[in-house]
View (spheres, rainbow, N blue to C red):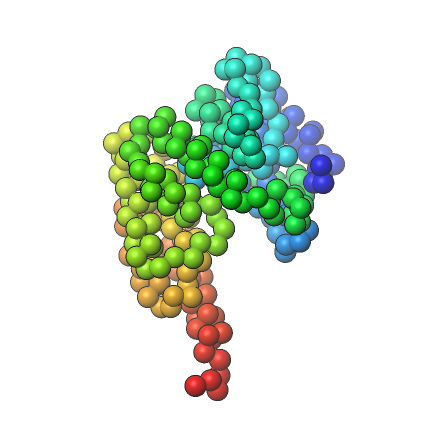
Amino acid sequence: ADDIALPRRLEKQLLFMEQYPEVGVCGTAIEIFGSVKTRPDIYPQTSSEIKAYALFDCPFCHPTVMMRRELFDRHKLRYDGSYYPTEDYELWARAISLFPTVNLDEVLLRYRVHGESMTGSDWDAMDKQAVRIIRGIFERSGFDYSEENIALHRNIGRGRSCRCSFSEIARADAWLQRLWQMNEEKKQYEKTSLAQMLSLVWFRLCFNNTALGMKMFSIFRRGSQALSDPLKQKRSALLFLSICKNSVLSHPAGAD
């Protein structure tokens, strides 16, 4: 109710949906503003990227979505209110296996964040429901899991700051490599898209823990060895700079 759709948003999505009648969901990129620093947020764009992203988190910004009614009726897809406040994520988790979905890479909505918005509150409820959704995705994919692994998976994949110990980071690395191995067996996700997503999760986890010092740099470089990350050099540089910044802040000039 408090977001801002840009003037040509509906026009551009409608034209896209008319051009590609097989697509059932079309979202867009957004600009986040409000009580946080204004910045663009680009969501995964292709069906395979969206499917891999949904393994960890909601792959669409809900207020940007345009849905094709015919496909949702055909597959009897409706929101399940028992998953509130993440019923959109649960709906997409079912839809993405039934027909193509897309996110346009253009910012067509400004997404407001403030203390009273769902984005700024009720994270515990969202996390609990997200664990239920991810459990369902794993079951449909034929992936083995434990409740402990599901909790770890949600914690490292949610995109927010995740502070860990070295032992927890090692567990996360082993789990990401296990996901890759399970997909090699089950072939549920397109390999390039899954590798990109696992690499992103691994980078975010390491970046959120650069306060642990230079050891994090070598952990990042040798971690998730099964994955090919085309951005590894760039991400390594960002990680190194963050470690140096944390070192300066924790040991200012002149300090004992």
